[in-house]
Structures are given as C-alpha cells and as structure tokens.
Amino acid sequence: MKPKRTILCVDDNEQSLSHRKIMLETRGYRVASFSRGEEALARFKDGGVDLVIADMTMPGLDGSQLIAKVKDLSPHTPAILISSKVCSYSHDSQADVFLTKGMYAPIDLLERVRQLLVRKRGPKRMQPRVQEVPRQIGVA
Image 1 (cartoon, one colour):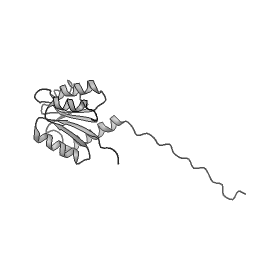
Image 2 (spheres, rainbow, N blue to C red):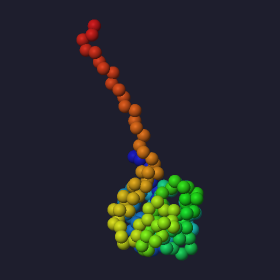
Image 3 (cartoon, rainbow, N blue to C red):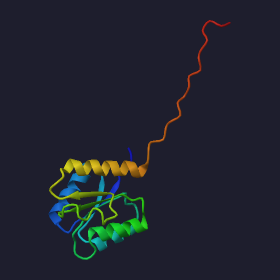
Image 4 (cartoon, helix red, strand yellow):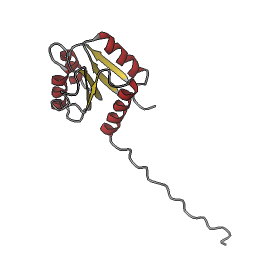
C-alpha cells in the first residue's frame, strides 16, 4: 500500500473546513485542519505536509500570506487558494491553483489535488524491461 499524502487544510469557516476534511479523508488523504493561518504555519514547519489548501480571507495570517510563507520554506510544496472573491487575487498569490467558492464542484478540487500531488512526486520511473533470451529448440 502506498503511503497516504498529508494535506494541510486551513479555513476559518468551520463548516467549510469540516466538509473539505471529510471529502479528502474519504479519498484516502491524511488531513491536518486548522482555522487559523498561524497554527497551520506552525504545523507546516513540523514537516511532512504534501499540499496546502487555504481560504483567502481569514483573521490574522490570511491564505495568500500563509502560502507565501509556505513557498519561502518549501518552494515545491503545491498550494491551492480558495476565495469567495472572483479571481482578483489569483495574480497576487503564489498559489499553484486558485478556486472561487461556489464556482467549482468538489470533484474539481479532488482532481486538482491529485494533479498537484502527481506533479510534486514527478513522473513514474520507467521500469527496465526484462528482455527474453530467445530459446533455441532442437539444437543438439
């Protein structure tokens, strides 16, 4: 069995956070959920996080600031920024993906997560093919 990927999920809206956590966990991901950016950053610094999903608008350290700090620490860690604002922040953020609340289906989020984790891991290594040695029949 392949190891579970750990996703850091941050949103000050407890209901949204709970829905995302359940959705991701039922797909086999390990989820560390937080309602404040500062707590999430402290957890990220402990290591072992494969992807970050953050809400844009939160008190204190908002999603865009959190992702900037994550990218400073680990530039290759993929990050998804979710906001109720229409794409105005997509160019100001270091997030790999920007999703607008209410404009995407849960399956879209799951597909983006899968794509970002595959990209982080890199392409599968080719297994060397074992060449069969031709057998000679009837040679004495």
